[in-house]
Each structure stands twice: as C-alpha cells, then as structure tokens.
Length: 274
Length: 291
Image (cartoon, rainbow over the protein chains, first blue to last red):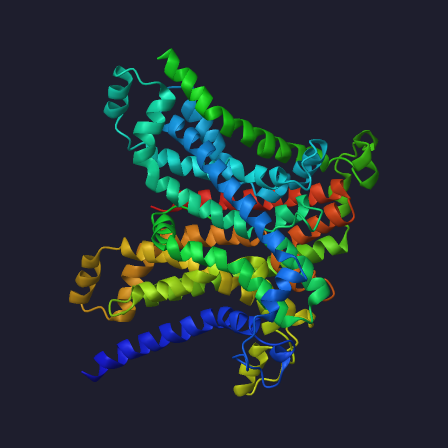
C-alpha cells in the first residue's frame, strides 16, 4: 500500500521540478522586463520587480524603434506563410493526384535533397540576391521559405487520401483543374495546410541566420536580428533586453498555444521537422 | 488527360522553379565557389575570382582556427546530442507513466522552449549565466558550489551552450519518444508482468526494443541538426572566449560575411555537407540492419 502512494508522489515531484527548471528562464525574463533599470543586477538576485514598471517597453518603442522591427517580422512571417502554403499545396496535390510522366522519380529526387543543410547554399544565394538587387528587401528574406521540399512531401502524403471519384465527378461536371483543386481538394487537405502554416509561421518568425545575412540596414531588421544587434550596445541594460526578448518570443508562444494540438499532433504523427 | 498533365506542370512549376533557383543552384554553385579564391575584390567584379582547385580545402586542413571549430562542434554534437536525447527520453518516460495527472499541462510546458525564439532565449541565458548576478550561480550557491564564470571561462563556455541547447530542444524529441512509446502494445507489458518481470525488467525487455527504431531516428537527426550550431555562440559569446565556442557554421559565417573570403567559407560549407551526408548514410545503413 505504501509503495503505491510513494511512486506517484515521486513521479509528480519529478515532473514539477522539471517544469520549474524549464519555466525558470522564461519566468525570469518576463519578471526582469518589468524591473527598473539596474534592479535585475542586484545581490541577491531579485525574482520579482519591487515596483513593476513599463518603462522598458516604452523605451523599446520610443528609443529603439522596435515597432518597426516588429512590423518587419510580421510582414515577412505572414508573407512567407501565405506564399508557402499556396506554392506547396499546389505542388503536393499535383504530386499526389495529377498524371505526369516521371512524377515519382522527380519526387524521389526532391526528397533526397532534404538532407542537404540550408547553410550550404547560403553564400551563393547571397551573391545571387545581390545580383538581383534583393539584398535588404522583404522579398530577399522570404524567398528561401517559399518552396519547402518537406512541406510538399507532407501535403502529398495527405492529399493521397483525396478520393479520385470525387475529382472525376467534378471533371464530368466540366470543372477546370484549378477549380477542382480549390473546391474539392482544398477542403479535404485543409488540416495539413493548417499544420504547415503553423510550422512555417514559427520558423519564419524565429529564424536568424538568413535574415542576418540578407538584411543590412537596421530599418529592415526582423526582431531576432535587431535584438542580436542590440546586445552589443545595450548589454548592461538587462531589463531593456529582457523586454525586447519578451516582445520577440510572445507572438511565437501565443501562436503555439492557439495551435497547440496542431503542433503536438504534427510532430507525433511522425513527421514535421522544424 | 492532356489537360490534366498540363495542369500538373502548372501546379508544380512554382515550387520546382523556386527550389531549383533558390536551393539546388546555390548548393551546386557553393561547391564550385569552394574551388575559387572568391574574395572581397571579386564581390564587385566576379570575373576577378580564379579557379584554385582544392586549395581552399588544403588551406583549411592547415588552419588551426578551422580545426578548433571542428573540435568545438564535435564537442557540442557528441556531448550535447546524447545529453539532449537522454533528457528527451527521460521526460517522455515520466510523461507516459500511467498515473500522471495533468499530462497535457506538463507536455505543453516541456515543449514550450522549442517554439521560443533562439536569439531571445540565448540572450536570457546570457544573463542567467552572469558570474556575479546570474540566477544560476545564485542557485548553485545553495548547494555550496563556487560561482562559475560560465561564458568567460574557455572550459565552461561550451558546456553552458550545451545546457541552453538541451533546454531549448529536448521537448521536440520528447514528443517523438512519447509517440514511439504509445506504439508499444499494452499486452506486451501485461505478458511480461505475468511472466514475473519487474518494472526494471519490463523496461529492459519491452520498452527498450520497442523504442529502438525511434531512438535511432532521433539520435541521428539530432546529431545532424546539432552540427549546424550557430545562433547560440553568435549571440552569447561571439565564438569566444579564446575561440572555445566558435562552431563550424559560425566560422563559415565569419569567413564569408565578415572577411568576405567567400571561397574559403564555401569550402567550410562543403565540409559541413560531407559530414551531414555521412550522418544520413549511417542512418540509412543502421535502418537496414534493423530486422
């Protein structure tokens, strides 16, 4: 009898300690962002602000013009998400349902390219963007997200389940292929498109290396690049940097909490990588 | 039929074109670039760049900074990778225990770091690691550990980055492990229990073999991913102290975009590609060995 109660208590104690460790950095970040200047660097370290203040957030807006960076991030992320869903759903559907000589071979070739890390192509991609005049533009940032081999792969797997009878019935009714895609296939594959959109949103919002390379002007920086740039000059302003981190992380966390089931389901069903 | 084939090409065209122009060609061009002495002078007029064969690769082999970057990255991959997988597995086993209450809550909390912005949390951890005011040293003080200069000491900087990476990433593999655990049929555990197997034996004889394929997949993909270490050292240490956290990709970035030695940087990218392909090959081989 005793053993039965000790086990669950230990188990939950472990889970709670784990949760505390995981949350500690995030809780401290939020807390420190409301502290007055210098308070986060006191001994012993303070866990809660003595007098919560919004001055750090105000400084982000007035002194650092972070609204601009927030807008850049939002524009880039939304554009990348919408365009990638459009481009990849068309391709994924075609790979699953439209007749094409050598379709499987083309698909396998694409799939094998999945192992190549994106960094390998970044140097020539930058030179290419330079030739095209796309350095320091939104278009330059989003171009690499637009077509995703993995996204096409995911959508294809899902679109295979669209019944051919349904498509053929629409063809007999005289509908064009694009109309069939939009009216018949899209409603059926919608769940996987939501999954893809959610993951694309997060990776575009959080991405750092490519925006860092392609954006040269602080006016154009996305939030992560702006933040990384600020650490250099404002490393002493702990509270200010924490406010900036909160502003950068929050949209990602909110999207995650809204689409939680989508994320968890997407990964657990074997498949979405970041 | 012909109409449908035409539609197929139209539907595929945007994706194929984008992938070809912005991925396949750059990767191919990168390999060519690594055979040239493309540098800051060539950026204005690319005609200046000359073909130098494998010179860049040979120079890398003699470059101490490159080898330090390789060693650092290896350390990160070989210590951080297994550690991260172990934490993921531990968390998954805890979460999957039958008696757990509020499973969804704990799962969400453990997964949350995965969706956070790496640059932001790297900055947060930079302050947590502060030798004097950081929360971490403060907490360690309670168990009698002297303050550690986490990011200032060459011996501690890489472990510090590994800790952050484990915290940030373990939730992702945890979910994959939970999914793997759920594919093990309950009756296997029951049969083992009837045969008199204790908790430990059931774990060893039912859980371990049942989870082996997941374990293999997770280990290899994690290690391949860890080779791409970049943002953490960029934000937290700029590769220091004394180059102790300069990773392969950070080295590539510095060569390419700080010193504009694009040919050299492309050779580093080539090395990264070879390592990644080797990893993928090992994975494929191992998966075939499996019954």
